[in-house]
Length: 274
Image 1 (cartoon, helix red, strand yellow):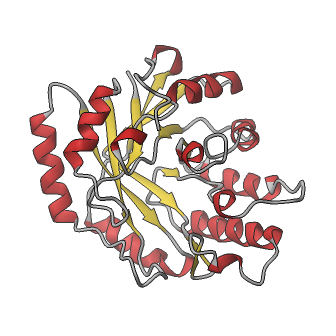
Image 2 (image 1 turned 90 degrees about the vertical axis):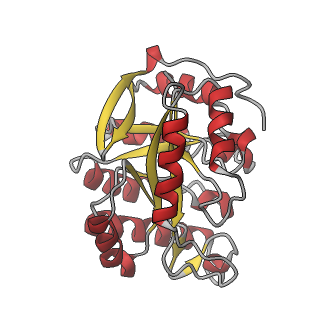
């Protein structure tokens, strides 16, 4: 068994890769189950890109691929929601109308400004930026419940580094104290390697904090937008999870979790290629 529960195809505005190419890469890496998690980011503040998902077309293509590869790999229908505090009712409406196996709740925009362009960090210290990012995430998890895991919970680190020793464990603990009783989890996202962070997101201290708070629901995902990022460094990631003391990796079907012993997971082929 080996799972990649965060990947994108050309149904996401920031990927040009056909779904079938991502599936073939997953098979070549030895994965047994994957979840596409195409982007929906309502009112994304960059006018040059639109993260609106054509759900009927996405569903049709995914079902076609499921049938074609049914004897080789399991393919789940997921989505990555880019939430903002003032849009939660809209996301609730979406989730009441649509059907997904797996839902990632992520923040790509804070204070109605996107992290990628750097607008969010203007006129704020890094510490102020991190605090506001986590405050908005805390608000969202208190007021939005139709998801399974939080995506790349410390994504803010990808765009702005800190020169202080601030770790924001106080507010992260508050977040965990909300999501853990709700049966929600977090992911270990391999894209931190690709973006020069030297490891996955979140960092080890946050993973340890999550476990200390009683967290057990954990997925692993490459966040791949191109085939050669699929399953990236999963061998190292699995060993890191084991060293912290996690016993299981989680998968989902119709939003319901299944828990798989880490010691039964296989290693990926070419897992360090990027």
